[in-house]
Image 1: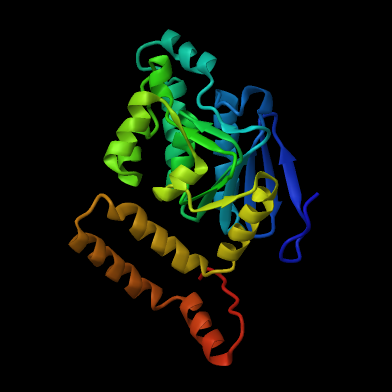
Image 2: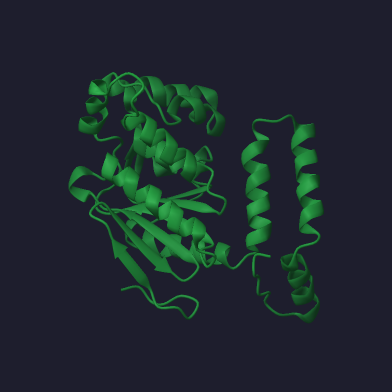
Length: 273
């Protein structure tokens, strides 16, 4: 059992495929299919969807931390689930529809999301990591698109998002060769922000999440909204969006608390209002 955070006792719920740990202001989601290298199946998608509902409706939750159990973060889609979609009737939702919807929800989650890559991260696992705002990794982790190795086409952001977060030629290298790169190589290109020894990753990622959870939820939510949407806008439109949200933030209780704490030389206590 982890130590309580912020004076609150830990709470853990165990799904057959996902462990949800409520650690004070941090909700840690642990992919729990280690024998299958945490491959994504319909049960895991459903569990993630429910966890996003619960975390989104919990005002005490301020940061979402996603990691895996065992030697892999996530090895991608469960091919059995993927192939089963071929038997779906025309117009009937299949695995790809469900995966796209859940990963979009994770990508658009209004609070900070951290992915802690504890091991192998490939194909749909890499696409899952790309949903996070911050990626940290164990020094033993490896990252690959890998779709090309099996004649599979990415469907949750591999081809669409990799060229936005990596140099285009490197993104094409990963897409076309299917080869894996180390966490250190990915850090050099900006995808990974921190690397830690594997035995220290869990605590280091949690410490990072706790530090972010101490910040103003109102400010972070507005920062995320502008930053996430800026890639689809011109610089002028992105700056205008920032100015609009700044006007809103000037009336927030969090800003007043931050200024008061600075003047009074104390740590601020943010409420998210």
